[in-house]
Image (cartoon, rainbow over all chains, first blue to last red; front, top):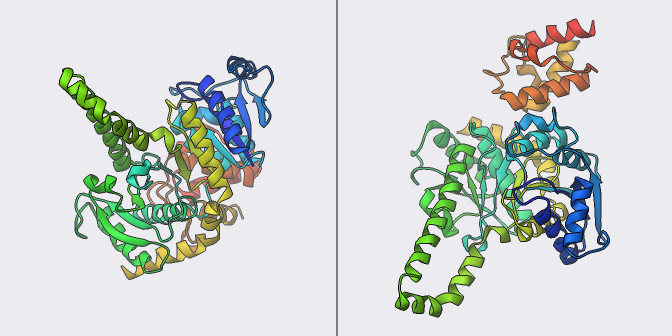
Length: 346
Length: 77
């Protein structure tokens, strides 16, 4: 198993990326190709106290970097020797089984679509993060790759999300929910009402269990394995969750450090709070998967540290070993037929 | 001939039935193409018709399948 890692992308690149890759090699035994500026990667390895390139690590030298400010098209136009572009080309050429990058999301999506290509028959790739363990490791599909969607895209997201939940997250018959402003079938914009009908119809085909609409406030209660939404709503949902969690953490910190009594109380519950923090930690679950691309591409958080990169690599290994992509490829004609049938019957 | 080959390419990319594509089919209005689709299509056309690189400035004027068919024919002829 060989995982390609874009070593130059992300806020903490290259050091934390290289460190995470070294940790992953030790942990998983997988081979890793670090793609990026060779000298800088070697300096990171030296900084980690190693005299030689560790066993299982290979370096592919590139001269350029896609920055967070770069236009997504830079990945195929101006910066063809960037770590991201070269890594994508390597994945496309079969030099590794999966790719991890913490870089510019737009560029990674554009490059994955144009270089690695979508699965034949899939209209749009979607960005899908996995929620931390406490929230049942549910996935949200899509959180920003497609700000405008049709009901056909959303039904395809549901199928792909179900396949991911089944093959990678080991959930037998995944429960699918549609993000909406109310649980009733009649709620939402025409897109939501139409998608509801199609999902209900498709659910009877047995590929997943559609449990209906879900409001934003229920997302964290582990009621569904896959939450389907357009990228615009999904992005707002995800960032609202992140922002609320940060706000609550700061408020709690303020309460627990207010006076001697609250500090004493904090001491009593410290262990439980630390456990909770770990259970809610996004770095523990890896990154967001670009679902719909013909080979596994993982977008790690831009501010990933070594632990997050190590876990994203672990996630990439799990996806590459699973039948996730193959299952979508094999069932694409069935999916197409079912979407068409659903449209006819609804 | 160009139109037939282009139809196959479009049917695959946009996951639609070949028979629904006509010279009047609009990329944006009928196929829902966005900017990424157009770049993807341009790359597929370059590969299929062995054209070195489509002129980016010409792309916005290619609104329908007919426009693109004529554009490709002019280049390969």
